[in-house]
Length: 275
Image (cartoon, rainbow, N blue to C red; front, side, top):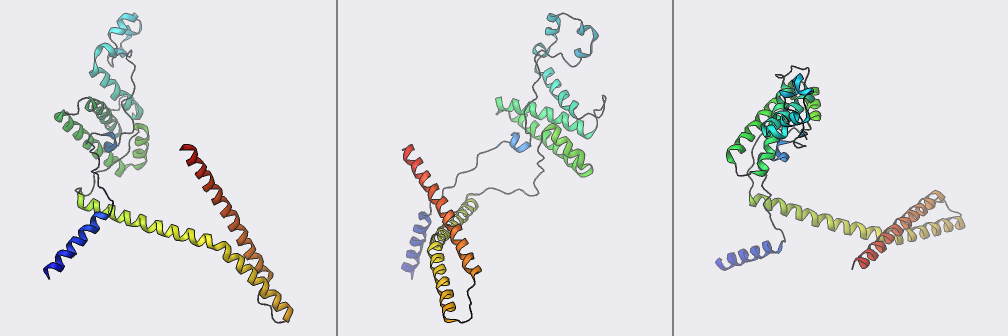
């Protein structure tokens, strides 16, 4: 009894290794990655010669010399001012009026500017764990605002996604832990499905290749039956329409088979030329 049990275990182990399936763990994507956050574009391109947000409103700066304007440009004022202009550029896309800063769409635009700026920062410094948490908190806050806007004004929600180039990715209803065993089970099912489809395709090709000779035999048989019935002056069971239908089917098969053979010949010539 024990010997029979051990032999069955050995056989099952051997069968398991015969299946050529390899599981590769999916590549890790951080929470701030644009693919997860839904940002379809990066930081808007702001010219380095642009004036700071506060200085651009000054009347004196309009008539100032080129050297003075250069001193008050983004290139000299630093990244903080550049970040401010990025948020302003995104907010200007969705503002209702000049002083609009508290509506849902402008708040989402402001958060989007922060997210994209910090995403660019995290690409340079991916080990900054404190900033990683900050980015995730801002992304979650934007998701809540998008969910609110989607619920109460769907048309404006779609318009906002188009203007800011965002893909809405809601919080998942449930979190599913990735496991090797479950992934191998799914890969095995996909492997079996591929084998099944391949066998069905091969059998379909075999039947299609046999269709031509069968139609030829059927056409000859129908013509013989009709001629014999006419000669013996008995009720005719095979009409000319039946014969014409078979002839059309045979002609379609001939054209289809010619196209297949031509494609095979081209593929063979291509392989030979590559080699």
